[in-house]
View (cartoon, rainbow, N blue to C red):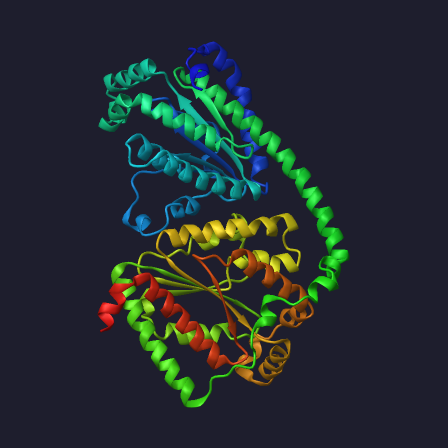
Length: 511
C-alpha cells in the first residue's frame, strides 16, 4: 500500500515559490466562502512519526486565517476525559459550520497504538475502526467535509528524519523516546496502518497517502487537495440545498398527507397501555417514600463507585415530565445532578451536528444527568413538523443507537421514559392550566397546534420505540394519566436499573 509513497518525490524551491502565491490566495478566498457555508471542514493528520504532520498543520494556519481554524492535538486522556466515553472529547472539539478543524493524534491514534503494542486483537481493532466509520459517516451525512491525510516515510527516511531533527537544537525537542520506540516497531505500525486505512477509507471520508520526505512536496499535495475538496464540496452543498428546498416545499403543501390516514389509524404500541391504572392516597404516599429512599441509597452507592446515570424524558405536552423529574431529583443531592431542558437549538448548537449539544452534557463519573426532552426530537418533532428531511430522520435511528451504545458501554446507566396520556386527558390538563395563574405560561399556541398532529406523533413514537428500544437502552412506557402512578413507576424503574448495574455492592450495603 505504501510503495507509491516511497518514490522520493520532490518539488524544487523555485517550483514551490511559483505556485504558492496563487494557491494561498485561492485558499483564503475559499475560506471566506466557507464562513457562510452550512458545513464544517474536518482535516485529520496521521502517519509516521517525523513525516511532517505538525509542520503541515502550522503551514495551513500560516497560509489561511487562523481565526476560522480550530486546531486540536491529543495526548493521554485527562481524568475528566477518562470519566466519559472516549469520543466525548472529539465531539466536544468539532468545528462549527463555516470553520476548518485540524486534528492531530485523534480518534485513530489509540486503536493503532494499542494494536501495535499487542493490547488488542485484530478483531478488537476492527471493532474500534467500525465505530470510527460510524462516527465519521454521521458527521458526513450532516454535511461535514472530512479529509484524512496519512503522512508516510520509508523506514530509512524516517530514521534520517529523526536524526536530522535531533541534530538541530531548534527542533531536537520534537523527537522523543516514544518516537524511537515507534521506529523500532516500524513494520508492526505499517501492517496495522494498512488495515486501518483499508477499513476506514470510505467515500464520505477517504484517506490520502502523502509522501512526507520532502517538505515542499507534501505541503503542495495537502494544500492542493484541501483547495480542491472545499471547492467541490461548496458546489455539492449548494445543489443539495436546492433539492432539499424543493422537497420541503412539496412536503409543506401536503403536510397532513405525509402519513396516510390508514397508517395513522393503525394501533400503535401506545394503544396497548392500560390507561385506567391509578395510585391514590396512602398507597401513593407509601410507595413514593419507599422508592425515594431506595433511589437515594442506590444513587449514593453509584456515586461512590463512579457510576453515572443518564435519564431521558419524552412525552406528550402536559404529560407531567416536569413534576416527575422534580419528585425524582428530590432523592438526590443537588451537587450531583443536572437537569437539561431541551428546547429549539441555539445559534451555536445549529452550527454543529445535532448530537453535539447532547454529547457536551455527558457528565463525569458518579453524576446524574436528566434530559427533559432529548436527541429524540430528531425523530419526533423534526420528523412530524418537517424540520429535517426524511432521509435525515430515518438515518437518525442508527445514529442514536450508536450514541447510546457508547454511553452504556462506558458504564453509564441509561433509562428512557415516554410519559403517555390520552388525548382526552391532555385536553383536560390544557383547560386546567388555562385557569391557574402560575401555570398559564406552560400553555402555548404550539401546544394546541401539536394536538392537531396527534396521529402523526403517535406513529412517530411507535417507530421510535420500535427502532431504538435496545437491550442496553430500553424504553419504559409510562401510563401517566395518573401522575402519582407515573412518578412512582419512573422512580422504581431508575432504582431497578441502578440495582442491576451495581449488583452485589448495592445489596450488601442495603443490609
